[in-house]
Length: 316
Image 1 (tube, one colour):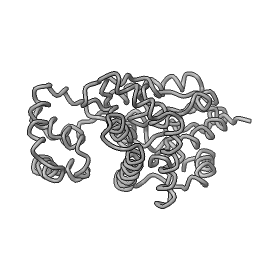
Image 2: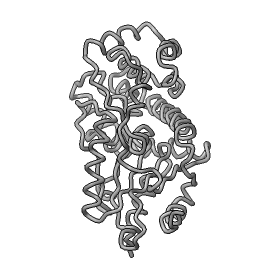
Image 3: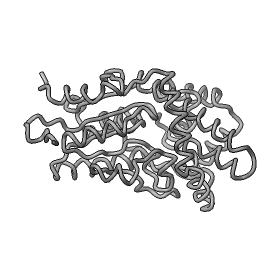
Image 4: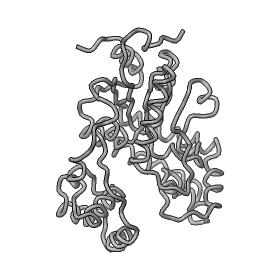
């Protein structure tokens, strides 16, 4: 039988569940929502897109019917979604959950979403398209380490928080300082009050043994292929979107697209997709370790009991 945390008088603002891809976050969030009369809210930057349900591992129709879900598949692929837009959408979703008496369970692998939610997000002016083109034109001649070094010379604080191979965020930081004359770290110091008070939230990062996570990733990618991931990519390719669109960078999509174009075998495309996903998981773990060091950790097997224990233990 479902237990209502709100009725018990122990009222966390939300439960926040982070973890690397394929760590079992979604299943954990649904199990918790069933126990605690909750709603599962997405904090994954690719699961917001409607075109790639299978390849982004969005909850299936049957899973979504088990408990209320929000912020999944609501963005068209021909749109570049931002942290700021997600934060605005999440703010509305959290307010709606409270009105309905549902416990918000925010789950995903995009660490920047959680940081914006609990630390605030600076209101940076939009970068003009001409500046964006200028920065990206300059970047074409630079590899990732050189581009990161360029950022480190201009904004060492932000550069220290970004991996050299996180090219998109390095470019974003360079665009901001070029367009505004202020570094991204300076803008972030002026961030408004966060939407959620971290001390009033139950937080957890899922930790999975590296070898076990690798196996989970490979197994899940194979299952995605069996469930129609290639056909999803085929339909998306038929839309002929701008190659710079964010959704086209979905893990597995570039390799599968090259297979559809006759540039590589399906076996090689699958192997590349699995390898890209494993590398992405490693970057996620690095972010959680450095940027969310104060969040409690638990294995997937122990996570539900750990969350229930934190929720039912009054704060000191």
